[in-house]
Length: 275
Image (cartoon, rainbow, N blue to C red):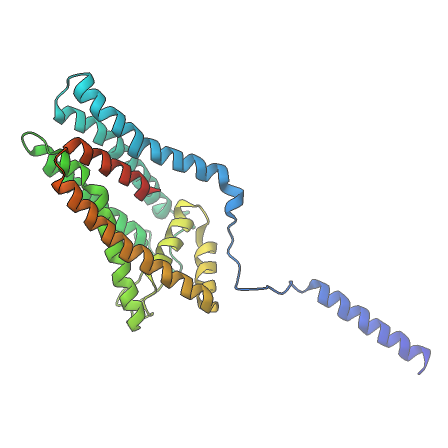
């Protein structure tokens, strides 16, 4: 072999080495998600603390303090406690609506062509808010106001979410195709477990990860059978578990003699549900 041939072979080897170094490293496992929870520990802690404060601690302290400590009527005491939770819920709902509606939004569902194309979680959020408002209003117009009715909303929401997950789980299991768009999945696609869609919507909008996360999550679900099994298991766990727990709590709150205990149980459960 001549010197020129050796030089040519060496040059080709160097070229291949450079090309290999420019290639992205092979991924060991399913496609990655653009989110590392370890980088958001403080934000998660602050959000959980705010939820616990407004949905559990403040109502549990205010209601007995105003009713027995300040000798205010049940109606005023319940109104103040409910108003704080209502204000925080309206603020959260308003912020979420604006993130999806604003012209520069980058967190809408994939291929969304309208500012009014809210995601699956948002429509369920709106439905839950309407249900809770109706229940609280019915409880407040009674004479005297019903403490039990004001304690029911968290359990009702748990049944609502659990039932939704069970229905979508059954449709996904049967391979039924969607007659309408569900978040980033267009009409005609096979239903996915509801928990997958909720994760996509919450992280993309409330978590601020935008469309990049929506695309990455759906890519991982399509590529990884193991991830599909995990999502399906989580969907059945939260769906069936939510329905059973919600029905049980509704039964306890509706039948327990002490309405103050029912109020405390409802608010404590509400904080766990929102977390």
